[in-house]
Image (cartoon, rainbow over all chains, first blue to last red; front, side, top):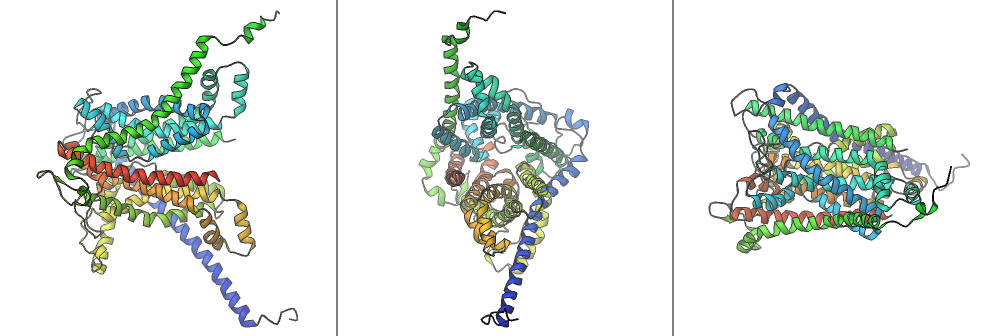
Length: 294
Length: 314
């Protein structure tokens, strides 16, 4: 006990120990709190997926994919027209946004001076933050008011504006990962800029670009806000690009608010399709891109 | 084997090749600048279409509570109020939870493999379509929250925030669903900025005798603060612009009601509800409301991106 310095009397040590035990208790409490937070966040994810599978799964049948939505109080039916409509509009959106998005990404990662690239990436992020309903308003003013009709064209253009930032960002990142040596080798062999980019760099980045595009397509399929007053909805088959066009997302919205059980079941079944689409593409994208990291 | 004429290898590029090269460069450049043009076009389109309403109602539009298509008298105060309040509820709930999760998943509480899976699961929350959250909210969340709301009303009804009988849809369910939807944004960006802190900070703090949580609260979170602010701003922008889930849960009542248990409305929900059937001055009034939403989210987003850009530089 001779080593104990005379300044520290036993009560002080006591209080120090008490303080230390408080500190470690605080540590444990906080760890438990954040673990509970994580659990709280995962509950809705699991609950949503489980509900959609249980409610929607029981309604899955071949009829869904071949028949038209039934009127209220009528049993059976499906949403074949909405599937076709979604395919048309998402296809149109992809046709517009994928080539343009990849070309912009090529400019950003291959040709642009850093300051310009920074400004355009900034604009892309801001565009990504524009609410989807405002993009719908934009398409309404641009297409619906011009052609005087709700149309698949308006819906497709709205979706393409929403897809564009995602395509640009993922393609841009994919191109930047391609090592510069590949470009030097190509140029050294006498290839011109566009040959280097299109024959060497883009093919090298293609898996990651495809992943990004798939994710963008999956997200666009579930978008509802930009479609409700551009493409609208019909109970019938899509008639053409300049006609009102049904979609799965708007079907969910319309049938969620009605008191008819059959239509509610169709809304759950359509939700199941949309959720499966994003879940499967997200998981595949996860594995595809992880394999790319050496 | 004869060597090919060396001049065929070293010949200068032909004119066609040069033109092709230049036009490819210009094509990509033009499209890139078009991104800014799209942003401007959106702003311009919304502004032009709302001009009739701006001329008719002026700034008073923001302070008026009328929304009456029959009398052609429009004001957006209840929707602006609802947009801000529902986003605020979401932030109040999502910021502590989201930052807490970010800390949990950026520190080594769990083995790396487990964390990777958990990070992915939290990200998945952002992948589920908004309209599916709305459907789930109608049939699952509202019934759950109604019980909670009744309890709040019966025990704390004297408090203005809980002063109305809960009717099902309302500000509270909308705020809760928004919380779920913005959580992944807050978690992802906060986690990025926490993970990018230099390890010396942590080592120094632990070396000075701080516990793990003292290090987190006193050193790491302050150091990552601007990144977290960026995350919160970005989440605020999303919350204000989120449409479908909110439209399906908020009750769409164009009145200002202090009680969180009462139905309300947001600008985005107003547009979703009324646009398809609107005509004449109502379209202009809706566009005017859309313009307000666009400006609000635009400012918030620009601020958020600037903060995040600044963080990324270090």
